[in-house]
Image (tube, rainbow, N blue to C red; front, top):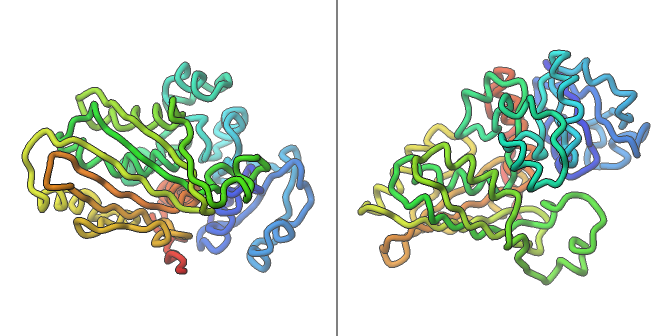
Length: 345
């Protein structure tokens, strides 16, 4: 049994962590911080947790996070980097769901996130928390940079092709859509019901902060220079993510061999479902679960491979993946506490 703390328990990723960790057989929830909600019982804010979480929120100065074995940061960018050094020095492991440690290059981080990095000495140490591609490093780590939601779909979709060296790494295209919860739990005009409902739009077309994160990780798997064109879209649903990925083949390969490539790569990945060739995965098939589903297409049997990837942006795209990393860090079976079946309808 390990003691777990959560910094920033009032947002969507925070409450998702609570939902997943409350019944986890190896976890004792110890501290949940919120400066604004200090003293408020968690179940009063989130009635779905009544009878499951008995803790109250506490302000950061009252919560002794150094008593925890691991602390999750479900906070805006910049918070984890300020507190992680003290926690790590006290022997506490840290999992950051924001972007503070995702980029190894300090200048690149500061360019895209517009804030100074206050713990650059930890950038090289942080393990990138995508278990299917980085399991051994995660198992040994004390600091995890949880991937972004979009980057999870793009990396798991492109990886087998790049690893095999059968596509042009310089011309990767990602056309991705996310539900509104990806923007976080805050009052903002663009995510109001009357603004986002019955609406569909692209954003960040000139450049999105998940592009350098994804490109840097994909570069690890190929000697070619990675070129990634990524366009995110906001769709009128609460949770869910769909990525349509395009890659140009640089050699002849059969559809059967393509399918076998993905099936072999993810054969032992409990949370990656490689569907039959030509299938059309739906976002609702992953809602509320830690499952990510992939399907391959090859229009007109040409030289373009289309990879369809779906996931729940709050689970495999955020909190579920973070729990998956925690399990690896502490030697628990990777799927512990994460076997929820997707909700339907």
